[in-house]
Amino acid sequence: MNLPKVYVTRQIPKQGLDLLRQAAEVEVNPDDAPVPRERLLEIIKDCQGVIGLLTERIDAEFFDAAPNLKGYANYAVGFDNIDVPEATRRGLPVTNTPDVLTNATAECAWSLLFGVARRVVEADAVMRSGSWAGWGPMQFIGGDVTGKTLGIVGAGRIGTAMARMSRGFDMPVLYTSSSGRRNETLDKELNARLVSFEELLEESDFISLHAPLNPGTRHLFGADAFKRMKRTAYIINTARGPVIDEQALLEALKAGEIAGAGLDVYENEPALTPGLAELANVVLLPHIGSGTESSRTDMSMLAARNMLAMLKGHKPETCLNP
Ligand code: DGY
Image (cartoon, rainbow, N blue to C red; front, side):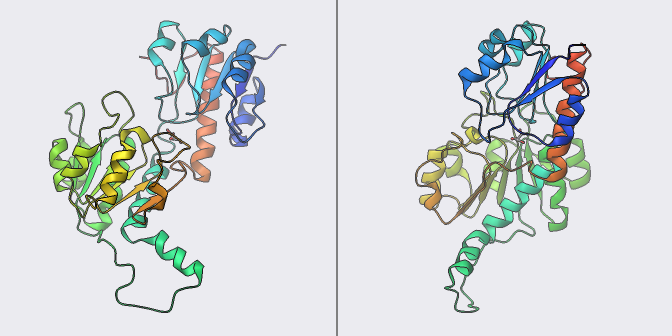
C-alpha cells in the first residue's frame, strides 16, 4: 500500500515523527536551517502533507506548487506565515499548535521580565569576566517587580497565563482587548481592568505583548507608544517581532524614554536592528518562548495528529479555517 507523503521542513521532536510514520512516508529536512524556498517548492510537488514552521510562507505560490496537498500543519501557535483565506478558498485545511505551549511561553516572558528588571544578564557577564571585586551597595540596582502594575496586550491564552502567574507578586493587572471583550478569567481571578491602549501605556510598569501579528498590531508599539510609557517601565515581547517598531524601540531605549526591554522575537528575524545588542538595558533571547522539553514534544504530537486527520479527510483538532 502506498502511504501518503509528508514533508517536515525541519527536525522536530521524534515523538511526533514516530506517530506520523505509522501512516505516512515522512521526509524531514536534515539541515539545521530553513529549506531554501525554491527547493521547498520542488520537494512538495508530490506531497499530500507538509508540516512547517513560522519561517515558511504558506501562500498561493506554496499551494500551487503542491497540487496533491491535503493539508498543512504549522509547528507553531502563531500563524501569520499562513494565508488562511487562500487555503480556505482552495478547500485546504491548515492548523496550528495552540495550548501546548501556553505555559512555556508565559514562563519565558517572566524570565525576560525578571532578567531585564534585575539586570541578570549584565550581572552574569561581570561574574564571567572575573572583574567582580565583591559586594557593593550601588551595584546592579534594578527595578522592583512586586506590587508593580502589569499591562497585558493580547489577553488570549498566553497573555492570560502570564497574568495569572503574577499572583505571587501582587501585581495589579491591566489588559487591552482588540475586540472590546472582557477576559472573565482575568476579571474574576485577578480583579484585572480592561483599559484603553493609552491607559495601559501610561499606567503599566511592565507591558507584556501577547497579541498575534496582523495588520492591526504591526508596529503597534512605535515612537508615540514609547513616549507615552513611564520612563521606569519595561516592555517584554514573546509574541511577534513586528508588533514593535524595532528602530523606534532602539531610540526610546537610548533616550531613556523607557527603562528596558526583554525580547524573544524580532522584526526581521534572525537579524537584529543594529545597535540593539550594544544596549545594556535589553535582554535578548533567540525566539525560544515555546522551548521546553514537554512543549516542543507536545507541539510535534499535535502537529502530527492534525496531519494524520487531514490526510484522512477528517477535521483536524486545531483547524484554522473558519
Ligand atoms: C509559536 O508557536 O508561534 C512560536 O513563535 C514558536 O513556538
